[in-house]
Image (cartoon, rainbow, N blue to C red; front, side, top):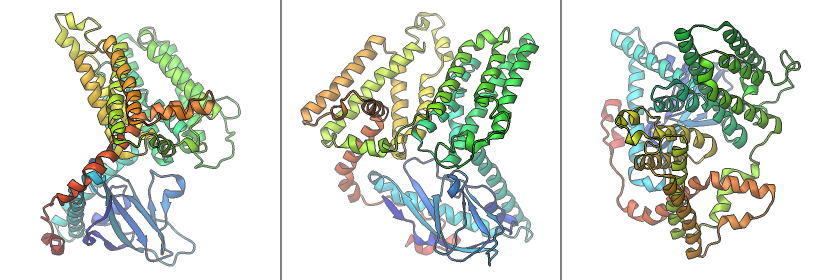
Length: 550
């Protein structure tokens, strides 16, 4: 559901980016307007509608595709962004045809939430409005910092928080921070395990972005660089720690530095937009890069990185510890290279939305939909249990359960729940554009992994759960009289094979969306009868908006 904010939040706004005094400096600094972005399922939008022009004020939105990153909002033009999540700022840019230095715009506001949350939806809108009123009062109080010491302190506080918070989101991203911290914590302090589960995230970003192509280029570049930096820090840290304990091996060090330096030089020559698939995503048009090493050395970035990893492997004591990660990292680099060479990606006609539309033709019955959600979750639990057992994370299978020190051993084990949290978060970001379903998919994966790891399922139990889950799906279709989706493409063709893969990749998100729709249809009338949850309007009088409470 999409709702309009109380009109008191809307503004007729005159912006002049050359004015950087006091709290006005915020607007030329990368920033996020609101602070409720941590709430899932709810989104607030600020739409900036141009009234005057031509002018020299440009809105910067760096997480978007290149053609949307710099917007000059003239008369009749507009741009909308997530009030609580999207980084942006304004800049002064000289324009040959400009007649105005500043601009006048109308700021309009909307908020969106699933219909099943109607009871609390308006409270979310009111919370954003209250924060906006508070922020507006603070900006007005600190617009002229030379007026008094209070104005100066407020201005410094606002600008300091904005500089730190905005820079962190623009350069690294709060979501990337969360993923990195979760996965590093999952390793329980084991360096090589950190490299395996957290130091390979950038490969997932590369592969998923290339194959599914549903991410904006600006966000992809930010995320890829952030995750690559985590991997580089872990490689450097574990290698330096080993060198500090056992000594530096000059051959290993020289090869590693040479390889990584060569890869970095190739990156600088190509630039981030082309490195991270700007051309493949259809966002960048460029002639082939021929500057050295391109045109001389084939695939120099991949080659340099593999040489650098080989240098680390050559260290007499670090190398054997690093061996499994060396093979893993090289294999992942070659996988990315294979994708680039072949151009393998999901065809536009088999996108998430189009595949979901086809899937739903065979899942109209409410009983079938609910049964599928439970049976699929059971099957997923079986697969997760097999993975936990295979990677030695089940204490009952690796001897820790019978050891006198089993409590300490269990605590020292890598956490499968945190791994599921971090990696499912990465996977849905680049494969599931339905954000509400993405949140629920991550939650289901985390809860399922926690329960399976606590119950310490054996392989037999895992296989039984998978078999019952698959059989339950067929039974649900039989009872409901609906033909399985699989039957609609059961052919021996490449297209059918790809449909089968996508069907399984998106099966859980599809069934969650279908179940949410069923629940909404069933319970929305009762929810609407509940009315709307009130939100205290404690800032109205303080900022001159008493009519909101009325």
